[in-house]
Length: 331
Image (cartoon, rainbow, N blue to C red; front, side):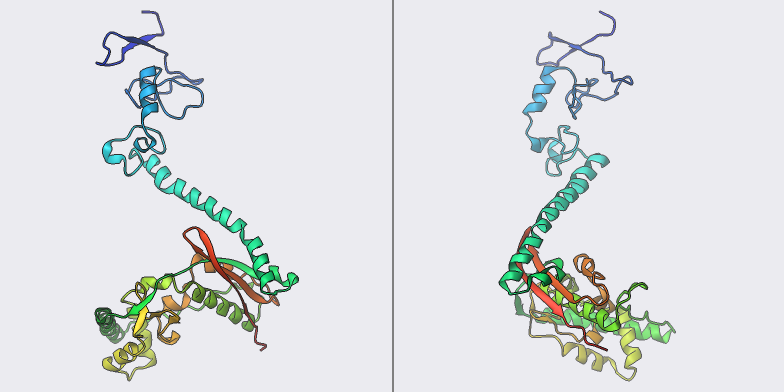
């Protein structure tokens, strides 16, 4: 046998045929990779990203496989149990297929979506008679939209919330009796370098609230039957109203439950917003802003009008829009 060459059988389908294999080498030496079809040393063929040997048989078999039966990252043939996942199971391929590529696809889709927003804002502003010189002063914000419809609040959901509330009241009384101190409410974040007046900052807060209202509380859906009510929420309540007994507290909270709420939302989530007064809500409800609302925060310099152009995103499309301006009340 000539030095530097090896001969292999293709397999039982053709036991007498011999295929000459070129030693697997790169500029730095052997690659150490194996053919994904037969397991023999792979050969380097230009820009190919999948490891295959020099056998035409292996290459044709691999080329005949549908993409759904190949790993989405390394193109290795998949076991039947791996078809649904789309990857071979290695940590690198799993991260590539399930994390990196979806994130990159989402980033590109969102970039393409936002590229159309300035033109849409100009056209919509013109239709509404907004002066040309004012159009760019409306900060852009693409928000989700909650399309859930309202329905009658089932008694089972009311009962579940009441049980949760009573449990938190009991725990809150016990913790206060043990000398524990509730965590104070978190105030809206404000950078030390913020030169705006209190009135301007309050106007921005109202604008962010308008953004939440525009999306109809997509985040609030997670409130479910607990309404984000926590033990700390009730500890703060008992500090403010130490003479209220359990029945008074429960009766007060239940009185704000509306007959009709969004079917899949928080028990206090009506079609027009939250039915629970802000001073009775949990700290999470009062301070949380989604990422897209946070992007809008602190974009207004001192003396600038507090304006925003809200757009809704649904299934990768932009639907509906509105211009919102919050007047700054002079101090």
